[in-house]
View (cartoon, rainbow, N blue to C red):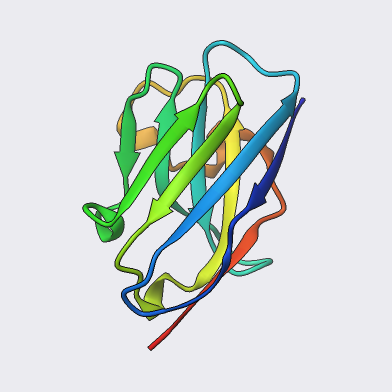
Length: 126
């Protein structure tokens, strides 16, 4: 099982930036897909961005051009650089990990991921 811990959330004004981090530990695999989801605690989660071990990426339409997902394999950390933040981006952000997901259309399916972090909050004020 992979343990995931998110950090980097906080409060910013509209137009500001944040960088979220997700540190992985425990049993990790050479082939995988990791992703960021957002959603209120206890509510359904929506995919924001995903990255696989081959560095292929997928983004939700709402964040294309503003958010960038990346990873540092040596440190086992995944990042989400969030620029031009808007109040509608306010949410709890969760890190997830699972087996390699080939088709981009499947990378935001919750059922494809078997490890989740506890989330980090992002609040954007207008």
